[in-house]
Every structure is written in C-alpha cells, then in structure tokens.
Length: 462
Image 1 (cartoon, rainbow, N blue to C red):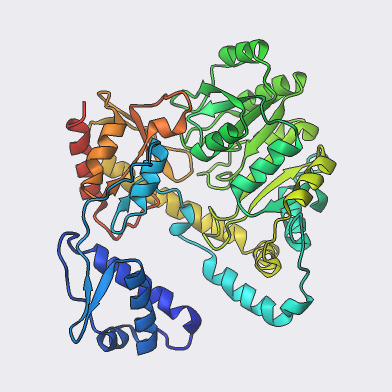
Image 2 (image 1 turned 90 degrees about the vertical axis):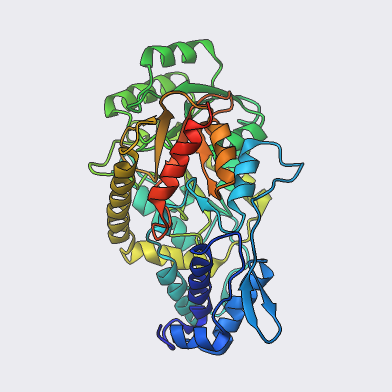
C-alpha cells in the first residue's frame, strides 16, 4: 500500500482489509488479530492508521482489546430481532446489518465498480478552488452545474429535451419522490405499478396513502395488455410507476411496441407517468427502449439516484419534469434541502468530463460477468426456474416446487446468510415463492457454498 497516495483514506482500506479478514474466519470463536505494528508493516501504513481502523471495529463491537495481549475478534451469536421488528422488510434489514452476514439480497451495483475515489478527489480539488466561504449556502433545487449536466444527459432531440430548470435534486430517493407526489397533488390517489415492484417505491406510495394496483409481469417482462386496458378503464388511476429499461427487480424487458401502446393509453386518460430510471443505465446490450421515448412530456416525471452507478458517496436523488414546474419549485423550496454544493459540483464534473460513459460500459461488463457466474451456479440445481435477466443486479427466481421464501429466510439467518423473499416486492402478498438473488456480491467469499445452503434451506422449508 502506497504511504503517500490517498493517505487521507488509508484507514478505510485497512478497515476493509480487517473486515474481510474477520469475516473469512469462523463466527463462533474468538481469534487473535495482528498487532498494530505487524499490521502496519504488512500493509505499508503507519501505526496510527492501523490503530484508527482497529478503533472503528472496536466501536462497532466486532473486536475487543486485551491489555498486553492485543486485539481479538468477538464471538458472534446468531442474529436476534427485536420484539418491535414486525415487517418482513424490517427483519431483512435488521439481519443484513448484523456483523459477518453474507447478504445475497444486496442492491448495490456500484460495489462491483464505483467512482467514489475519483469523486472524492474531484471534491478535494474543488474545495481548494472554491473556498467554502464563497460557496452558496442554500440551493433549494440543487447545484446549477449538476442540474445542467443532468438536463444535457437526458436530452434526446429537439422534441425530447430537458433544461436545467426541469431538474430537481434532493437528499435521497425517498425525499424527491415524496416531494414530487405532494407537488403534483397525487397523495391519496390510485397508482398502477408493475409487479414485482421495488420495495422502496411501494413503501413511498404507502406513506402517501396511495392505493396501489399491481399488474403482474410475465416471465419475459411483459404485461397482459388486454388486462392492463381493462384496469385503466375500470379504476380511477392518476399515476403509473414503471421501470425505464429493464424491469426491476424482475430483469425482463418490455418491448418497445408495448411501451408505446401503454404511453398512448396513459396520455388518453391524463395519467402521470413516473419513470423509474434508477437502473436505467444498467442494461445488457442492446439498450431497450424507454417509456420517455413515447410519453407525453407534460405528464412525465423521471426519477433516479446517483448511488447505483457512482457509489454510496453520491446518495442524492433527483427528478426531471417539464410539467408543473412551479408546483415542484414550491415543494422543494418548502423542504429546504441543504446538500453539499461541492459534492454536487464534483458529481457534475464526472458527467461533464465524460467519465460516466466509460465507467458505465465497464460496470455493465462486470455485471454481465457476475450474472453469468451466478447463472452457472444456479444451473447446477433444479430448485428454481431461472430466466436470465437483461440487466440490473439480480435474478428473480421462482422456487420449483413452490416454497415459502419467508421460511427459507428464517432458516438461512442461522447460517449468517440473508435473502430477499419475493413478497417484499408486493403490497398484496404476491410472489411468496420467489426471491431476488443479487450478483453484486463479495465474490471473495464462497458464493457456491452459499447457494448450496440456500438449496438446503429450500428443501427443508415446504
């Protein structure tokens, strides 16, 4: 490890090394860890750096110090849930946060390849160039340079265009969706969603007291269009929430002609289309058509985040809308988001310096590679029906024969493995025999053994 390059972040690399070292060992017994000096020599860092990394782990309860003997790992019991943890979603998150858990349920594509180091380097450079005393303290709609960069990126033609004033940036996806639903007076109405649907979207719609109508996708990612037309005729739908390219988490692709027909029906009924673009760039070739290619621009809102592509250091969410801009401005002014202008400028530089597209190409290639690896492991077993996804970060698997995946989840907790049961992706309790299985994993661990344990748990959970 270079003593000078990125020295400010050396402790993070040491911390990650120690986490992997601890997780590689058995969870049920204590082990002695290298001394501060031994670790410093092994990794080529200062003793103060190793001391800080150990202190972080000690604060988290992963290790403890014995006077004159050094640092030892703590024996970790099987994770227990608090009595107040009632929903399955809360149980999944509570379990995944336990130390030493292998999360087969992860939802972080950028963990395979992030832009966090370039982002932080740009931020440091911008901090030197723009003293904080000169930076604006309040940018309620987002940093102008980043809004302009997003508008340029989403513009397709003289008809399908965006301006910086159409872009609004908030603290995260939850915040911008909440603001948009309130600004467009959609709280308490009826929404149509594809099913399975992102749990984050379902929870947001529930918080806004929106009644959700779920329309199931078939194994290839298509709606029954006759059933869809019937629902649109019968129900007072004001909002449709649909994935832009690859259906998430199902992994299928809606054909362009279907999207065109759906947009025609939505426009005829004056229904808002909220296009979920959080995974919109993470498709395998060729690029699928998007709903925004056909939608009424005045009834279209596109929403997304940066973290799926850049990493956790870019948590902000954003929306683009050409219709009802004044209402969105009032709502964002009322919320008064206070986001780092320098961090936003650094994200904008990633776009304007043309670093995003090469990064996306490399990330898509890595996702495809890991998908193929996991597909090979899954094909060794006959416990599920597998449809190779067209993009995204996960498989959508159906147990064959049918198995209650909640019971599988409970069995795997004892093995320190977390899965995402399919019923998380429905408000009506559908998909109980499905699960989302991620391939954005720590592939340094024994994933083949984790899949074997999953199969065993399925066989033991009728």
